[in-house]
Image (tube, rainbow, N blue to C red; front, side):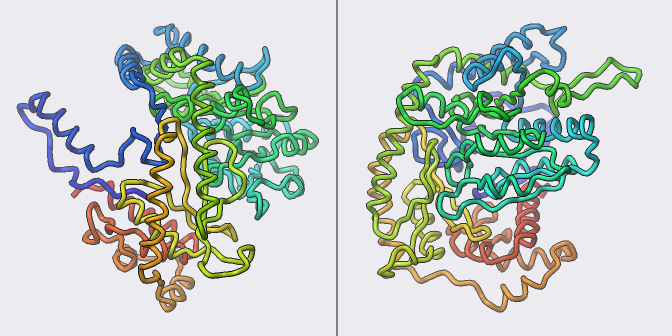
Length: 507
């Protein structure tokens, strides 16, 4: 969770005479100074930095060349189809596609996942008569699948993962498949822990029951194949695996394009047909939308196309080697740090670690120290590093998440040095605690029945009130996150929804 931007929506209402361009651009630049850096290898979440000179400028110029082109209608702007076909073709060639494979360029992983879930729902409805579809997914599947289920009317069936490896359990997933199952999900890798699910076994179980299987390779799709090319062992996970029927891959992650670039692939055009929306029952132009969006700037596929063309296969292989080197160095350092425990065996640029309770002789029985972990995150933030806190869930431990990129190779050493110092500082701080009376009270609350005033009071108590700090967040997040970790899931979701709503509101 990031601090909210300062300022309100009414600071610059529309002016009768407008403002000078230089003044506007200067203000935009000034606003960015409060943000975490997106380049330089110190922000270990949300951003993917290739560390290559000139790449940002190339993407910006390519976007500008197509910014005014409307991607809605490729018959009017045929270059849009050329760009998309090239991008989808590159993804299919990299990810085990065949001559039958088809796909679509989308605005990001969430839209790719939404479209894959819609496709599976409509396919199950038309081919098997499923009217009340289910979505079977491991507990570590991305939240975007739950969003898709909520939007599209599927029932999510969440299956626990292996508590040691953090990988999906094929046996448990197989047992969860029913005649209502429209789609089974696997991750390559899962975001939370950076481990690749046993895709082949999951896809086989789905295929045996005539159910579609989607691989969420939004993160790993443009990295794992190049890690294999660089000599790393990578288990098959893509469309070459029997039973895998669709796959999502983000070009704005390890493809290093700017945000707003993803591809969803299907085994064939007949399956992809269920993704499309078409409507001719109105007096306007006939509408055919492959994606959720209608009108959209062709600048996004243009910049992604330019970046892929510029880096090339050898370039991506070299960048993957840098990610692997950074990961090796980081994992070695983390495992040598007292009380630090790496979760699972990270395989694709993502690493998660927790901090164990100090002084427990048997480390196999030592529990995570949530207070120390969250203090550590704050201490690292003060030293200029952003490590993403992830709270506990269904027996899975709280942890700090790091996304490694080529730009982090030279930062791992300083990071580990600061981590050791930050741990020492964190251990010296008073433990964070949550008022038991408050947590007991929270356990009995109905989140949907709370009034706005009651929500505001709870947010203020939790440290998320408007006066709690810059942009509505305190300077140190440990007390807030500790309390959130103790709250029931539905109440946690309601509080965070109201908090984010308070950030995006007119003042």
